[in-house]
Length: 130
Image (cartoon, rainbow, N blue to C red; front, side, top):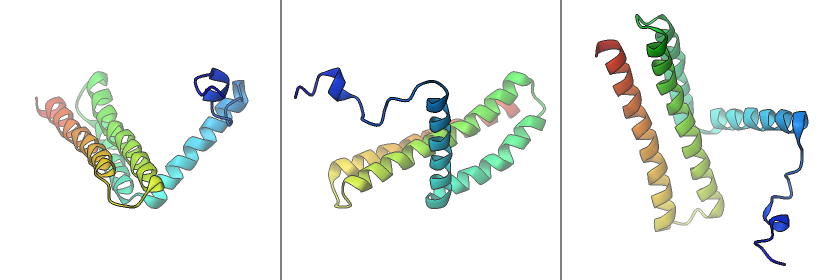
């Protein structure tokens, strides 16, 4: 078998198209959100932060673009945390042994969350006080 052959390069779980694919993708996404809420303390904390900040963004004394930046920077933190959690789960699935590359992957994911949080603080500061 040629691994570069596109017939064999695709996942065997692919194949649905149209509305069934959209419905399945939606269900998988909800399952991912439930898993993150159940298993990831950081995601739960950031959801609480978002639950406070998003309503504040809506009533903030700024125009529509400013509100969009406030909400968007808040949602970006959640997105990056979800990706970081996925990286961590994948690394842990491969091995729980200490390995320099596993540590690097987890540290880089964590750094991405930090950058998203710094972005959130900067955007909120510039929109509201800049």
